[in-house]
Image (cartoon, rainbow, N blue to C red; front, side):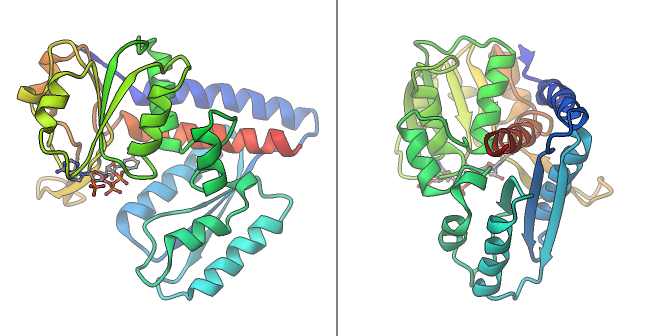
Length: 291
Ligand code: NAP
């Protein structure tokens, strides 16, 4: 068993971006600028946004964090997005999800200028992804593809099982793995909460992408010898021994699954850092396209 080290692969991507950004700056060209909107003060969202802002600093991007109260009206949030859409200095906009219940995710995502939608959630970009056209690929599936590429994992002709069909992870992941690209060219099965025999599908998988948000759902008896395991799940579970009071758990029972597989991502340190690296790549791309 070998570890798919997301920290290492993400660092390599960020190091390359840092050099590219520095040379743009030397030439007097614009450096990428990412704007993040955080509504309320959800603990996990705070952590994710802070990590994104830190990554911007690391690679030499400008970043702007806009904090809004949890009870802000939908209209005011849409106004804030409009301001960023029309600000020529901003290359990428992200609104950290989840949003408070009184705000429609759909309206907010649709309000972001598709050319600045570095999260790749806007319907225009989703449509392009489905058609195999160049676009902003959602950061988590994009990061997973970059990780497979970094470790030269053979995907062509393999059977990939994606557990979870969300718009931000499972569904785009299934599109990317089945596309005529390298990595890609997999035969993909997508499972969800109504799939009656998930174990049977997983046992046939050369590659499993677990993205359902149920800690340690994938157990050793569901995994074929030599499979590649990508664990997307991050769930905070109480742990009194930790200073924070919690620990992060993936969707895969790592200790029992790891000995059976060829490659596996740890949690933390697997998909998480790759998601951020992919977001940085999307923001850089947006800046290049506009300038
Ligand atoms: P989500 O929107 O809640 O979607 C979960 C998906 O899993 C749904 O499609 C759901 O099926 C399916 N599912 C739930 N229970 C299931 C079960 N028992 N068996 C089979 N399928 C089941 O979650 P998400 O946003 O995709 O995130 C999934 C996990 O990844 C979460 O732990 C999240 O924190 C993590 N995540 C990590 C990163 C990262 O950077 N590492 C990024 C994003 C998300 P239905 O459609 O039928 O309801």
